[in-house]
Image 1: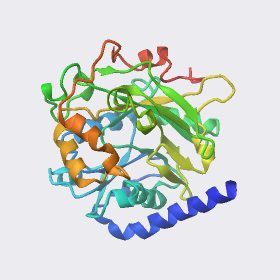
Image 2: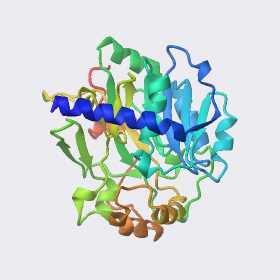
Image 3: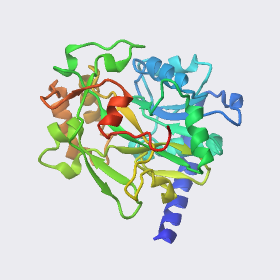
Image 4: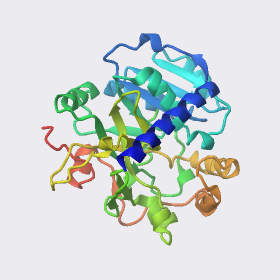
Length: 332
């Protein structure tokens, strides 16, 4: 198994090397990256409304430089990113799906610029939080991990949603999305340990409850490994759900204790999701077999209400810790 996984990793790195020709730099400020800079990597398309808060939040945490791949946005996303002094941006017209949903493009940039750095890999609709994030910068977290020779950090992707129809409230650029997406599911998650890559396979939340109740195995997986001390030999396998070498997937304590972990507040369900779902169903770029998700897109375009009697109002990371959804572990 170890031999086969080494060859799989090499094939993924070779794919990224080949895909580098699909990227055209629009604004390359990577010369400003220092040896201790924490980096953030993301592939985006038509995210102009989300990016002001996304950048503000992660700058406050301590991200020093952002590296974006823009996949043919037509809403001003690329132009906005080019004006940001701590952002480098590349553009590509090529298929998001055929680049492993953007992972190949980011792997090349991580090989080129991420080696030796702590790297966050996020979607634009993900807000990274961790215990004490309001008072302890990201550098404090990475130093703690470095001291213990821990090279990766896990997070639960937590779907956030409003109370009422998704289109009922309009989100404005720069606004904290949790002011609108104030609710989440706290207790309907299942966890399995995948034997091959040894990552956690977590399912649940409102998407599993509303859209995949009859097909639970097709529900999105919610466990991610967004923060990694990068080496140019590393490669994500499936989004940030799993990575090679597989030791980096061990972001849990298998001896019965708790390990430090965080959350990704998933802000997918803003009012913009209605129009985006119709577009993505037509483009067929977001799933390997998009026909399997036609009902999912149709349900989203119907402007559903994801709230239920079991929904919990979001109050902060301490609430998530009390619910067992994140943990401070030994980081006191």
